[in-house]
Every structure is written in structure tokens, then in C-alpha cells.
Image (tube, rainbow, N blue to C red; front, top):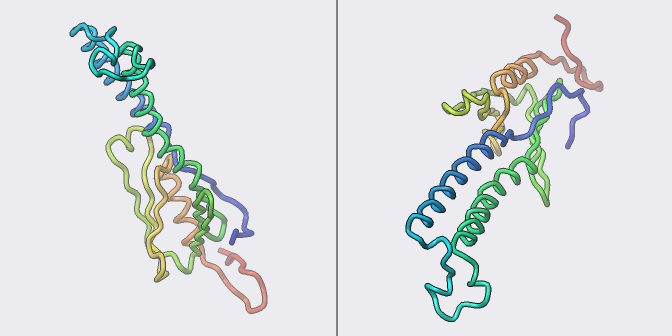
Length: 183
């Protein structure tokens, strides 16, 4: 279902700001917990000191377990963002907007200028600082009337490009491919 028109813009969800913020927050929490462990004198204690019958691995100090748990929390918090980036692609052609999604199964949704209804840009306070946001495109289709482009880098610029493509009049002559109307 890919379009043959020339490509104006290609984008993927921009996860870098979220990855950095999550990493910083998790690092601060880890440092705070480790400092508390040392203040209370339990950093070098092993899990075997607290729970009996735990295997040999329990001889590791509590501070090591803290770092392992923090690492797992960080990996799982970043994994969702990475999967979002890998599974979503946005392609703006000179005659349509295509949203491709999926990892194992893929889905492509194409919005043509004739099906385009409305476009909105949503940016949080943090999104304004890092130039990121979501673009919501409403279509006249009954099946999927709202299409969301999430975590778009420079969303105002991209929204202007989408508006420019979608506002372009298209002339169709029976038996020929769509052609752009001369201005």
C-alpha cells in the first residue's frame, strides 16, 4: 500500500528526550538509594543476612542488588520507547501522508488530500522545550478517522508541510494518474 509519489518528509518517533529524562531520573533515584544504604550501614550486607535459605548468589552485597534492580527498571522503561521508534514510520509524499506501523505484522494507512479533514499539534511544556510533540490528523474515513503521529521532532514544521501537501488541489482526468493543478 505504499505510494509512488516523491517523498517530502520521513520521520520516526523522537524518543531521545524521553530516554534522557528517564535515565537521569533513574540515576538520581539509584544514587539516593545507595546513599541511604550506606548511611544505614546495610550496603555491604548480603541478602542471606535478611532471608535464610537463599542460594549462593545471595552473598552479593545489597548495593549490587540495588544496581541490578535499577538497571532492570531502566531497561524496561526504555524498551517501550525503543519499540515505539522501531514500529512507527511516517512518510509524507507529495500527494499523501502514510503512517506505517507494526513489527511482526505491518499496517500502512494512507491519508489522501481528499480524505483529509483537520490537523492539530499537541506539545507539552517539555515538548516545547525539546521541540517535540504529537500531530493528530482527522480524516473523513469512517474506519480510522483519527491518525496520530506521536513524538514528532519539530512538529510545527512537519504540520506545515502536511498542510501544504493536503491543501494542494488535485485534478483527476479519467484514465490517467493524478496530476497537480497548475497555480
